[in-house]
Image (cartoon, rainbow, N blue to C red; front, side, top):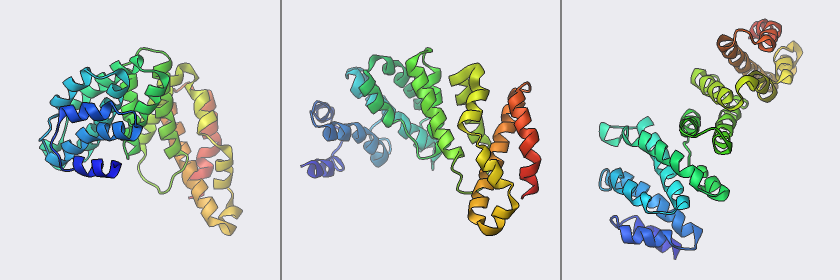
Length: 261
């Protein structure tokens, strides 16, 4: 039956009564389908369903569905702005409205509703994904909910920076990671940086000549990550010239890593 409903929604025009009916279902698959339906129609009809039609509708929903719908629309708006083929595909005016809306709804939700809603605050590109969490967190008062979003932003970028697959410009990644780290931990940012992302075993592998000879893949992976760690430490030192621990780490490893290139 769910397959039949999905197929029909893919060809039916927008219907507010049907949307409300699907949201009232006790089956989580059905109301998740409802949450995705407006986004699908925005893509299918290219303006057939205006975002302005969805926003007033969300005002009449309970906080849990409100958060799900706003997070899903926010993710779609961010993706469109990042990958727009034409001006009509962009949602520049909608993006800040949805950021504010999502931030306003979060404190009204239960922890379980927040977890479900924030699961759909997502983008396939790490910088955009992290930035969404940072922007929503910036609209919130200091507290557990803001910390939850900042923790997610830190985790998103940390996961990317600690598992590099190929070398490329990571300036934006580093900026976002440090922004998230400093917003979350304040004066403890340097300590958290060294605990979370600076791995001395990686430095040791990256500067071991014998390792390059008998296990090039392991050495190459370590060397790339070590160079990213150096870039991260350099960026942090630029922001905080008095960071003694970071300065000592760079003095010890920066030249040794560069020599092994």
